Image: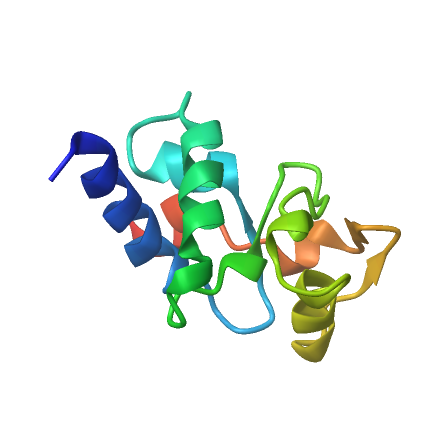
Length: 110
C-alpha cells in the first residue's frame, strides 16, 4: 500500500463522520490529520471517493464554502442536490450560512 493510499483511507474515515446536514473543508480534514498543508491531497482523495458509496464526498467543500469538487460528481448539479436534500442552502455554487453548517473535525473529534 502506498503512503497516499493510507492517507486517503484516513481522509475517508473522517469524511464518514461528517453529520447529515453539515459540511467541512478539505483544509479542516487535512489539519485534523496533522497535515495542514495537504488540503489539495484531501481533494484528490474526495475525487477518488466516487467509487465508495459510504463516503459522503458531497459534504466536503473549499474553505469559503464553494462547491469546487462538483464537476467530479455524475450529473450537472448532483453535489448541490445532495447538499440541498440535507437542508443546506446553496446559491451559485456557494453554501449559505457556512458558519452554521460547518463541522470542524478538530473540534468535534478531539
